Image 1 (cartoon, rainbow, N blue to C red):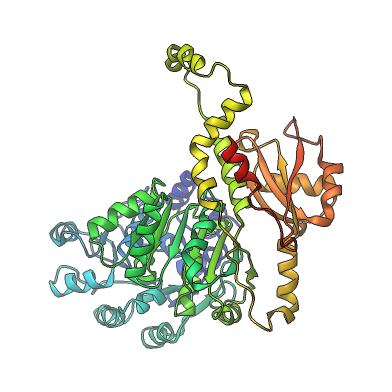
Image 2: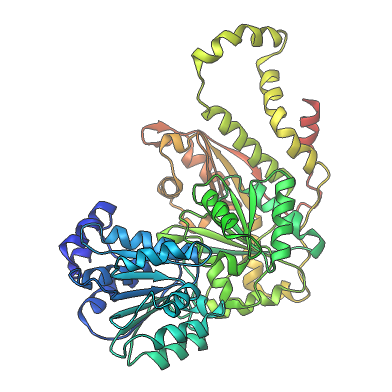
Length: 557
C-alpha cells in the first residue's frame, strides 16, 4: 500500500513526495484511513519510532478547515523537545495548505506564545503545564476543538500530568474526537480511554508493551564496583557510537557524565537540574552530532526524537519496566537496527527474565570486551581515520622537506608506528593491566540451557579482516549477502560486523573458519577484489589468554 491509496488530500501527498515518503508504516496504514473517514475515538498502540506522528498528523492536517480561523486541532505531548519535533513535522505535512500551527511549551517566554496564539491558529501543539496556564489566562479557547491527540500518553502520566490532562479535556466539547497514541497501555492510560472516549477503535501494532523487533537486547553481568569501568569498555568497543546512557537519578547522571568528560569522552548530562537554556544547548549539540554520548535520566530524555541513535546503554535498569521500553525505543527508529545494552550486578540477573516476559523479547547474555579486543578495534579505527584523511598537498608541501629531514634514518614501518602510537598509547597505557570485568554467573544459571547455548555462540567466534569498507560502498547488508552467497551460510551464523572507511571486520562461528577462508578469499564486491584474513579467535575457554602481547609491542615502539 502507498500513501496515495489512503485518502489524503493531493496537497498532503505532494508534501510527502517532497519528503520522499511513499510507503506507510503499519500504524500509519491502519490509522490514517480510519481517522480520515470516521467520526470516532481512536487508540493507537505502537512502539516508539514507528511513525505515530504521521499517523495522527496527516489525517488532522487533511481534515482541518483552513477557512475557519479558530483552533480545531489540539496535540498534547509530554516534553518541550517532542512538542517542537511534532510542530516541525506538522508544518512540513501542511506545506501546501493554508494552516497555521503553533507550539506552546514551558521554559520560554510566554508572551511570545500569547502573541502567536492571538493571531489565530488552527492547530496547537502543547505540553500540558503551559497549555493549562494559557487556558487560565483565557488565551487558548477550546470550545471549537474537533480533534484532541494525546501523544505518548503513558509518558505524560508517568511524568505526573494526570490532573493537567483532566483539566484540559474538561474544557473541550463533548462532540470532539480523542486520538490516543502510546507505546504501552498501563492502567492510567486505560482510565483516560474509559473516561474521555466512547467506543474507541483500538489498533495495536505487535503486543502491548512489546519492544521494537529491530533492537538487539544484550545484558552484561559485572561486580557493582566495576560498573563504570564496564561502561567505558562498551563505549571503547563501539568507537562510532552515537548513543544514550540512562541513569536512575539526577545525581548519578551528573556524576557519570562528569567522569566520562574527565576521561576524554564526548559526553554531557541531561537531567532536571539543568536550566531550559542548558537543556536546549545540550540537545542541539546531540541532534547535530557534535555530542556523541548523552547521559540522561528517564524523565529528562522523554520525548527525545533523534534519528540514527546506535546504542542505548542502561547504566542501571529502571525501577519501572515500562520505562525500559521507552529507553530502548530511542534506537532502531524508522526501521533501522540498534542495540540496547544493560549493565547488571550479580544480584540483578532475575530482573532480565521479568522484563523478557513483559516485552516479549529475549535478551542475550553478553561479555564485556577484553583489553585485546578493544585495543584492536580502536587501533583499526585510528588507522581508518588516518587513511581517510584528506591530504592538502598545497598546504603541506612547504613543510614536507622539514618533516622528511626529521625522519631521516627511520624506516617506513617505524614512522607509521610512531604516528599511530602518538594517539593510541593512552589506550595501551590504560588497558595494560586491565583484567576481565565479567562477573561469574549466579548459581543455577549454568543449568539454563538456552542462555548457556547463546553464551557459547557469542564466545566461540572467529574474527575476520576484510579489505573493503564504506568507500567501496560496502555496508552491513552487503557484507551479509556477500558471505551468505559465497558460502551458503545462513545470516544467523554471522556475528558482529564493523564497517570502517577503507576496511571492515566480521565474526562467524568458529566451525566455519575454513569455509570462509576457502570461499570468500578473492571474491569481488562492486567490481573490487576482496582480501580476507583471520584477526583472532575469541575462545574464552582459554583462561591463560595473553592480553598483554599487543601492549608490550606498543611500549617497544
